[in-house]
Image (tube, rainbow, N blue to C red; front, side):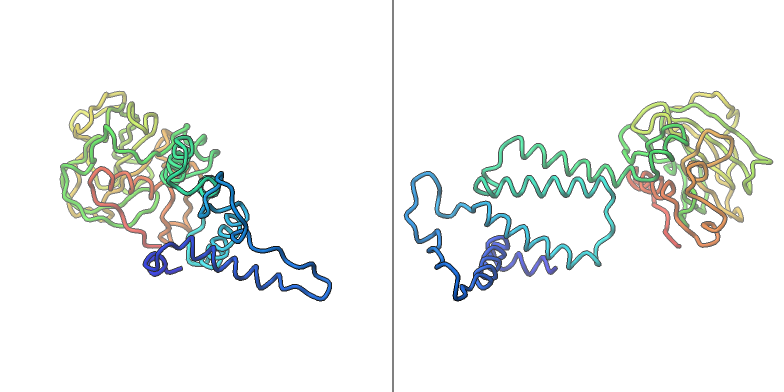
Length: 303
């Protein structure tokens, strides 16, 4: 659908309504046994209770049918919507129909406007918190992986990095210092036998939208001096130093609180085949989005 072209013509709802009414008029051509049609409602005298330009429910239904046909025709060009997004769209459609029946958007009630805002928030929130199913979230300790930067610090604030692929987390190459995203407790510090090509550091966030979630920094990093399990961290406090030109670079992402396993691994979002095909896990995309929201460079989707 060419939205710009439709908007330039004037009122797309009125044009859609007129086209729909014309099609229905042609479909009702009387046959030999057909009763004579009544004169159009517009030709009858109206009482003072309804404005002549106010759409009726049949008009609203016809308009919605036209827009539904357009949506179906454009479906192949749109991304698939999740259940929450579909619910949000359905709610908005219902509010729109009610608004039209009552005289247009300008006549909508405060309740209807509040419902529309709530539906938009639900749709937006479902996009931000969609890294895993309910079962996956429970498997990783109930962490929602919300992309909300409020109260958090960019972990790459003290580093100069080049973003690379998104996999279980987000890969980078560069140098500098990695800092804590927010108030946290260190839950793992390892420099050998981690199952990774290098070190693995993890901490649990204590505040913000992702309180209770784990964050890991792995591979080409050296723990900050004295960093130990159980240590309390403040937002922006140094956690690790990047080893320049390390063969595998570094990786940052959502942890699981289960040793050196990532959220993506525990939630069933990651496999050796995904690694081979450069698949970006939902958890990896979520962490990349959070870094971007905090002002850092997001990772790249390569698969």
